[in-house]
Length: 303
Image (tube, rainbow, N blue to C red):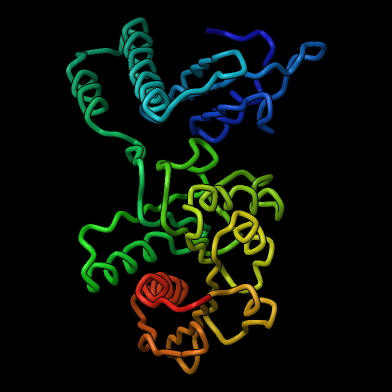
């Protein structure tokens, strides 16, 4: 279905960033503008740039209109795949009319590969932890999985939820026991989403999926993120890669992780514990946040 009420701003964003857009509340999305004089009625939008072999061919826009309009993860993936296939088909037609097409075999091989290679993580009902932020997400994910497996958890599902993915498609899961926000500085999103307020709103998406009484781990002094988590009836744990933890942090935190003299120290209920010396192979924030996640899971006390 097409819509005559939306300007090309959303499509322009997808084309300029060569990245698809999923907006299930398109009438509220800052990337979407409406034709002057038309009402901003509820609708959902998918916009996919058509790119083949590095060349932009156009854009595919799909709309649903109405109060309950929405696209799910599978439909978004199908639209992305169809966009890739359509772009490749346009490339073949253009080369055929231009007299430069010798054979379609490479294109057929590429289409077959597209059908077997998903571009985004599968949608999960429940995961153990989602990790976001502009920093060392992959290293934190690997370190947390390593620690959880060492304590006996089998195949813990820890998801790297990049800010860009959160902006485009939302969370790739429904529920989580824990969330880790590494920093307030997303680097893989447009400039407007790097502004302080927008960045915090974007990063807080991982908090929304944490079960009631679950844990959100975030940096010390990230007070707005801490307050948002507490407003959702969640517990907060904080970390630093030095000793600069304020009294305000300590008042809200059920556990603290910090670095002192090159060593990771974890504390809960007034009982500090060493988690070992910092290593040189991965960033310090990944080590401290992952150690704190494992510590919170395995150490209970009366909060």
